[in-house]
Length: 214
Image (tube, rainbow, N blue to C red; front, side, top):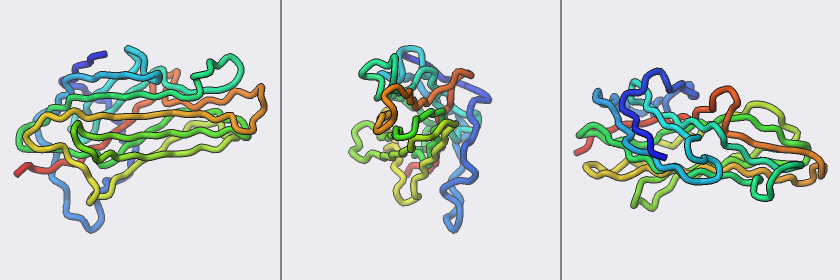
């Protein structure tokens, strides 16, 4: 799947109350005035079949969103043996205005889960720049007896921010995984964990920090 994003508007809704760069830290550089362009998006994995993942940049250059429309892991009657685990690997070619570079400062993931008592669910997420061995990984667990919307936020400490190399084109890789374990739940119980919604999709929001290149 290839998607070109040039000037999306009104697509990013913040999931976070404040920036991770606040407090006693000096104010971060403002976003560059010129538009970010996500030139292409390659998607692969059982959780994002062709045409079910889309990416858009916020109007103020402070975030981009990934919208999934068919991303769910499940177990129970009618489920295929491989349905307990779904994954998605996105490869984004991000063009930023000259003289600037960016890092992901926080990421918000949300969806809906119905986990029978005794079952459990896991959300794993990570991202990295092409050629950089440093990868940011986060894992979140959900216990059985849960039937509701879910939302998690990962924030990166200022000192741990990984910025894209200045003056180089490096693709951004985003890897996510959903997994459901039936555990001790009833053999006839159905459990699922989704990063999607029948109401038009759930947006995963990645917020950006900027700095000037030397």
